[in-house]
Length: 234
Image 1 (cartoon, rainbow, N blue to C red):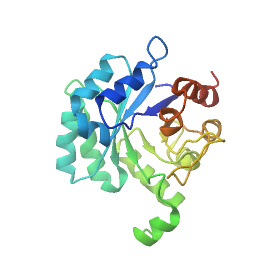
Image 2: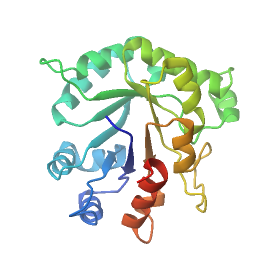
Image 3: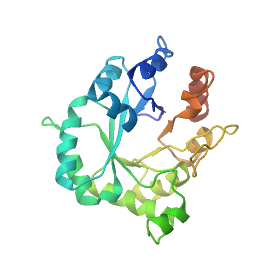
């Protein structure tokens, strides 16, 4: 898959989501992220509807449970024809291997599977003081990425600030999917480890995930096109 901009459709329900996607009718079909809020509100039908409209989908549910439970849940998700699924890397190598096994269909096909390392709202201080992880945040993220690679996953979610070190540790083909993207003239909101689309491209992000800078913009289509220009040079 080529590099792309993924819009985080973190809306409360179906109507708001589809009205937003209607803004892009007749043009480029954005890659979209469906997260927990929308999926829990609308269930698998919203995934099917957005897929019918021609959008690639990153289903961002961050599974994290015992290996057998994650395997069975991924077996269910494998039928939704999404393009990317994810788990939490903190669930261990065994859990990630089970997720991969459950996601792989009988014919051998499957979506890309990636692992969340540390959320972009987590600072090193909080990670160490609240989660009692003594290593630095960069070292922790690299280790989680190496575990994901060992489990057979395709890449990780990390902040763009760690994309280069993930690539160095896991190879250029190991995907770095990076939220925490803000325009240079925008507010950080609740994100801590952030950068711009252009800088994310320079650092080595394969996909950037952009939410409020596009969805809350006065002109979401123009904001999306700005992301494409800065990240993909198009």
